[in-house]
Length: 113
Length: 114
Image 1 (cartoon, chains in turn green, yellow):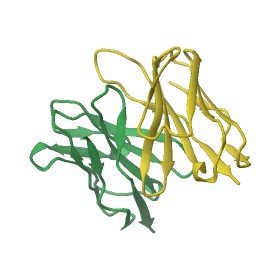
Image 2 (cartoon, chains in turn green, orange):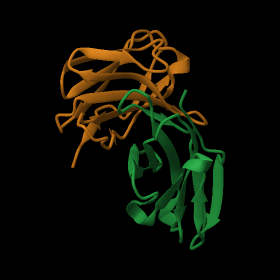
Image 3 (cartoon, one colour):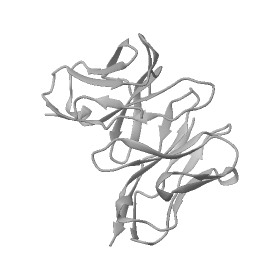
């Protein structure tokens, strides 16, 4: 069965520092992978998605993610974090049935001034 | 822009009450979903619907039912609310095409059952 693991429950970084959020997936075929962000009290907003092609995917708000098949990973990165990036981040993979997403448990990002 | 609207943002209900959570999307999407979000568990799929009057169980359908009488509206029903159904509920929708598309989420409905 497909699954997504986000090993870090919380991460704290200083404003201006670089960020990497980890995501590992379990899926037999070529996965469709997503990163979503959720600000407090809000729904989820899509940051970026990987379907095929270039393994380095650019998203909104300066985020990027790299698909590494050999490591079953899809880590999210940002070179310089802003205070407004403090939120919860979810990695997801599309399941066997089309259009249904399987989510990781999320990583809460705290940004230190 | 696609808009997925959950009309009730915050609800407090008593144990045993029947609860309706409504979701409306304005982009003629075929697929609609209800997820439940709990701390440390991420989002878990309750039910989804790929057409009017069609529904399929997700991973945690127990204690819930759904209704899709019109394409734009997908309702989640708690027949007899229990305290363990206190949670954030998220509705989502997406179109069906040959290429995978983005799933759009509503802002969520916070339900407290007392």
